Length: 66
Image 1 (tube, rainbow, N blue to C red):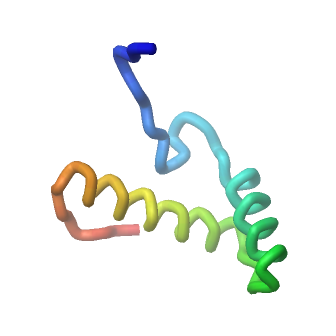
Image 2 (image 1 turned 90 degrees about the vertical axis):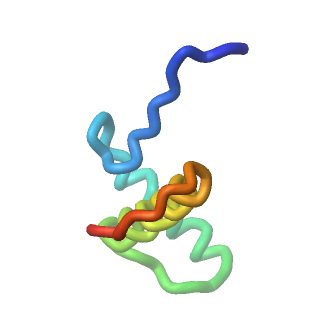
Image 3 (image 1 turned 135 degrees about the vertical axis):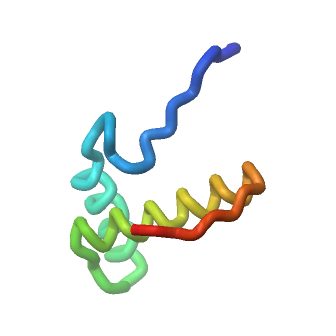
């Protein structure tokens, strides 16, 4: 299947996914017996990994601002 456009909404502009991100992260952490995180912490963690993945893929390093 060919796509003309792919949109990555990594900052929640199009859709607020913080509740589902938090639920998913904390479900995994619970299975591992690890610390549970607040919604704000989960979003920051996921934003950081998304930023890192994009900068490595596209090869552009910029300062990380939150």
